[in-house]
Image (cartoon, rainbow, N blue to C red; front, top):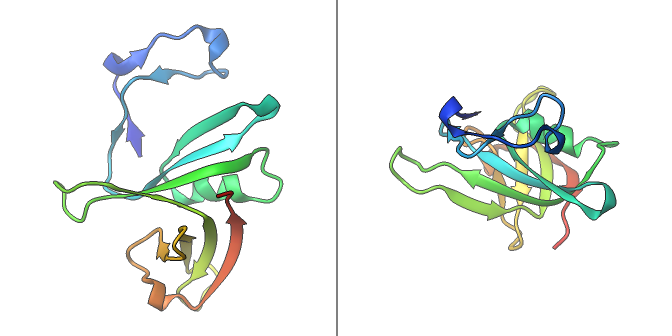
Length: 140
């Protein structure tokens, strides 16, 4: 998740914010878990970019009938230890991957320009996935 503090709030005219919105200059990641930068094409050729912390929220952007089209998706993987570097990967396709027998035993799986797959969670390796369903392809 992303957290902030009052000292990092940026004053912005209300008319530039959505109802109830606030602006922050600094966000902190409270957990060492993967997260995403999602850019969508909004009305009138304007792009909006979102920081997304949970797979379930990313799925909402991918649902049929979602209001906006994703134009760019970047996956950020945490370091393997607390002092390492984060890794960013451009996503070209998003898949729902099942790794167990139940319908709820799934994670998101991604593919990059090189055709390499990886999962959103390290607890389910690519070798363990039993099937995949394509959710979306992104423009190159």
